[in-house]
Image (cartoon, rainbow, N blue to C red):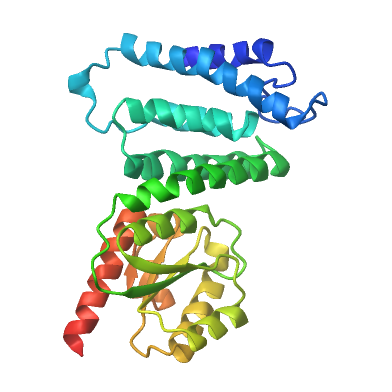
Length: 292
């Protein structure tokens, strides 16, 4: 959406001190009060960005009959990732508001915009197209967006009376944890008592599963280099868990590419996204109940 770039550019003139940055550009800004900067940015978003976004989607032929939960395109994911690098979270929130006005559900936003945007940011860093500081700030903004959408997303769910507990963590040494946060949102919406502990050490993971009951433990992995650490974590979970029939579900970028490796590390199931994680966790709990 080239018109979005034009709208963002115009915000620089309308909101002094709120200049857009390209990837790799310095993050220094002229000093101004936080309240004044936010007020100027909010006015710009309302007056410039949202109307132009709505105009471009209308002119592209988006009519009422077409608004059936459209998936964000790859170009929109890339554009959104650029926004969270270059702008404050208010701009990202406005972008999502436009997608929702087109008919995109929160589920679609989580699975097909936020998660791919996080993956794209990681790729920018690995390919040396963005520095670590920019990517870290952008991921922090994604976390803020996710938290803002958490309550309405959970409210959409049908929790049911059954109490189910799951521990979500990343492999020891893993630094990519945004996907774990998204999976947590899907599980909570489905009625799970989800405990999220990304960045947990092997010893801490063992302590958690020994002290608390969990029906399922979910572990995330992004790269092959930590495969041995993940196998060790699963071994610790099985040996120390209070629930001797605990289920282990693995996911993350690595298992999306190599689902066959789940058996090699001792996992029960592979989940490919937040929605699939709910299905797999429910399937395991249902099977465990029948086996009792």
